[in-house]
Image 1 (spheres, rainbow, N blue to C red):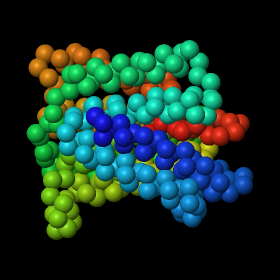
Image 2: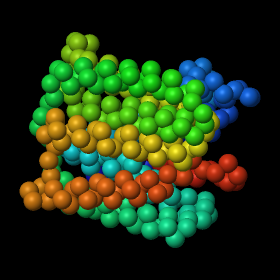
Image 3: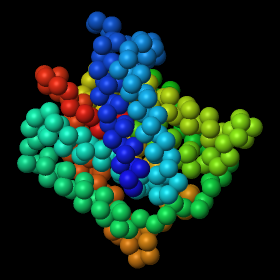
Image 4: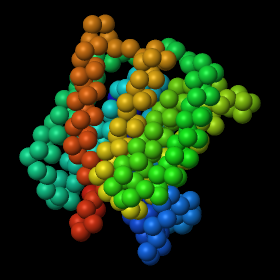
Length: 284
């Protein structure tokens, strides 16, 4: 759980750097939806590269966590990074949190405590070849549907892009568990390896577009839902993730409570535009 929370801090810090870079890289008057050129322009900025470096550190911590905890616990911990960044904003950057938001921080902490008490070890299921191929198909579908969603009006576009990015990160969570042999020959023939790359790449592209335009709060809420619910179900149904004996109810309650609290803090997906010093956002 410590590794999962450490990954959340890395992802959250990276996202604010990437948000600043994405908006700086946007062409004046551009509203082209999902634009791969935007990602290429962002890659020329040191903030975006620094964010990628932090993402790399967070990914390593995430892998360690996924090798020890069920996917549902790791996903909830990553979503709960919004609580960490909200507190950092209040303490370090003097961003005012409402009573409801402070309550949401407490709710997130309570949910994580419930998960910590009830979570068993990671499931021993390795997943079938069909599951690996399914993840590859889902990753491709995320990219295609996300590209089409980039043409939607502003409000539904932000939700669709955020949800697509969350699903892409969810594919990464699942495929990490499907890759046991990391030798070059094994990776070359494993569809899960391609799904991991395509899912992660699609998520970054959609998220960069979501941060550039539209409601970041809406996009962040969609991302939290996409990266938690689906992967958690896959872990329980196909990979054998379980709870401690007799504590299934506590795990379900903790998951729901932690995700609900994170959704209440979705505005910290990015600092308000008029904030002098941007607050750290939640997990990306």
